[in-house]
Image 1: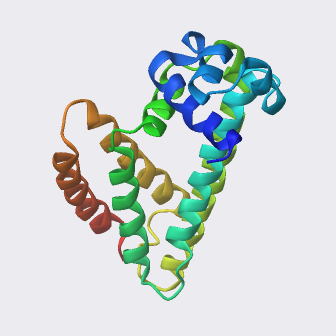
Image 2 (image 1 turned 30 degrees about the vertical axis):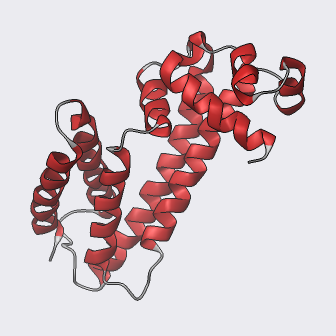
Length: 193
């Protein structure tokens, strides 16, 4: 693992467990096994490192959705279902990246609230646009209802996912997977033509 990758890996874990305020550049350097001045050769400050991590996550998110939906030869129902189930599964796993994401969404560093909001809004806009295109294609093909607009179907899709993902506090991943299957069946019945 290259130094910059190791910095990102270790800082993700530290930000996830200690939060933004509780994580210092010295602590990150120590975990990476480099001296603090060497860390500054990669990032000018903690803020830049934190924003870089969020940007990476946002780009990975958009790339994941593009990959899930960019399968023209796969039926729309299967594309939407696979993206839905995979997304729920991935976000209910207990790992530092998910902990980091959840923590900064719930408790964003006040001084970074605006740039974080802009980054996340941009990635959400891109993802919803991708889903909206798939929904419109489904409507044109007569697979999805035309009684709802594509933006509403895309928004509802994500509202379902976000609701399921927040249940990780109360339920096991297996229970959430079962609930995801049931939720998908109801959602699909509501949007199909």
